[in-house]
Image (cartoon, rainbow, N blue to C red):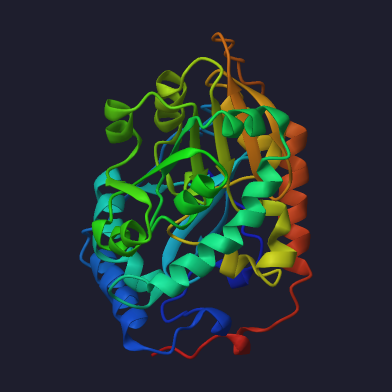
Length: 335
């Protein structure tokens, strides 16, 4: 692995904190930060190198090693295909512990579950996203037939409620039972577990991931499970943050974009490649990124290395960092 840091600003230094627009001004988030730092220092959390999750290459450039919360977290780009991913990556058991014990505090900066008003408001905002996706005629047809949709990583069920309003038989799955209480009270069908648990109870027509797939450590296994679990002619729908939209959604700040919770940072090309390599065909994918993929008879596409995409993506990241004019003084002072 080569060190090709995009700037000195993206090198880890103890005491770095977060973008002030992300600071929650309370003790819950800072406790989450300190708890994670303590586990690193005590060698409880450990990193391990692995091949590219898309093309299996072992050739990487490390481009950053500090995340939005000032935590040490290496981010690399595959030199064969251009997929930006955490590598070295935390061990599987460390991610399980992180999500179970620290994620909500670090990101939500609160404990407890969302109010009914907030969850319903978010669900109504999701309607516009659902309508965009339903412009795809094939997905719209499945909705009109009241087909089964699994919302994986549903949280409180805001999108589950939205899909139900659009005529799907929508069922949400998430490991955080506390977050599901209010969603159930609002009428969402929410259950405990992940995709593997969901497929024990349902043979879905649609599997939906909203800002979840970038968190999935073993993405190839998840995608293969989705392919096997869907009915023939079913759809996989994935919405993830778009790497090339950093400037419009993250203030152009790579320090804010790279984060411990995100194992992968996709372009539409890298998402499409990794999904098609499992056996899906692409119905739609755009730069936001919203993708709709069809399960057909198994037509797995062998992955082809894409040196040009690596070069283009690295150049985009380098130029984005070069054009980020804000200095370190905008960041919160160390606590």
